[in-house]
Length: 445
Image (cartoon, rainbow, N blue to C red; front, side, top):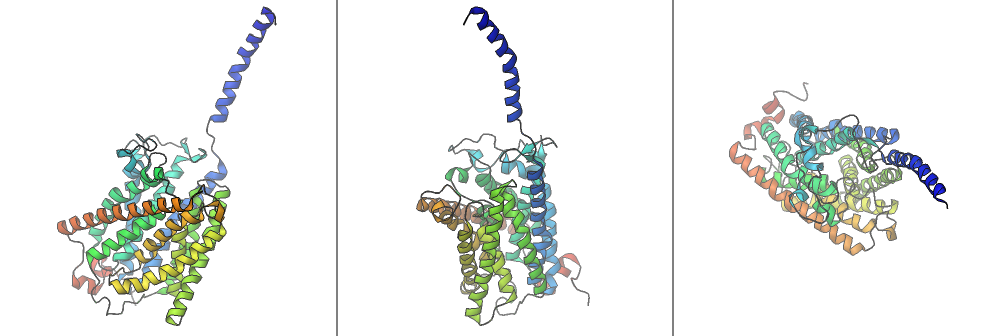
């Protein structure tokens, strides 16, 4: 090549290279995907639907008629309270990744900073997601709905006996010291403590269900039993409400699990399928276990089985196959039936609406079995090659969550009890919290 030809080639490259660089920049620049955005918007609405009206009706039907409004009021008030706290600092504490380093344990391994407090820097143009394909504002709201339902689940453990004012303050502190840190450790990505351990939790087995179930158990132990428990009959006053609420939870859970794929893709589709399979199996498992044990299947039983299946498949939904979902669901229905009935009776604790028996036990079972059925050798879609090693990692994640949540919840409740008292008076409990706390009646007949 002559000098002139070389110079000509150089000139040509000088013209082409900027264009290639611009093209590379255009490829790398995140572009909003309308399909992913639409699915995440839909999932967000479905998860909010799980709390109001789903959980409100599910719990409201199971309490006595004099307490239906108090339980529903608690669900609505928690929805409002956590929404605001999420905006002020919760989202930042859970998902701010400043200072995080892979496999380096520091303060930011446990909780995020405040660089995103008051949603600083989030605009309509902010894009997020696994491939940066939907608005960050949608992700903020989607995760907000998870933060809402988790403390609302705890209500079922201490229903019919906690002061409304104490409940509000407890939920605000618990959200700050327990929920946000656990969410950060599991879901914030590389540098989060449980993330670096390799804990698999697709949609909230540890973050939501074990967290809420253990907190509920601690709360019911600290508050003590309801007046008259267990000798006085305290049957659900409207199982129709409970069945409607369970149905809403079942439908809404598709947003919970399939939405956690953060995209309209194959993972979301499989998560939806295994959620349906596991829930159906758990409903039948609980129903037949109750039928064989007590002689008759009950509407409350099948509704409880539905929720147990939904809970257990939550950590596994993105990594297990259909048969894994079937086994997890069936196991959840049978195990949660015996834990929610026999275990509570034998140990004598008053978990009013079985928050621990269903969410705590179901969450623990699902989290551990995720380590088994996420393996491709058993039909899963995860990266698990050593099942025993992954099960150990899952057990570590479960153990850490149980211990951390139990200790911090106990301290919060004990301090609040000393400062303002947790429980209504015996007279207020006898009258019912609807009148005593809200001066209203659920039914004016």
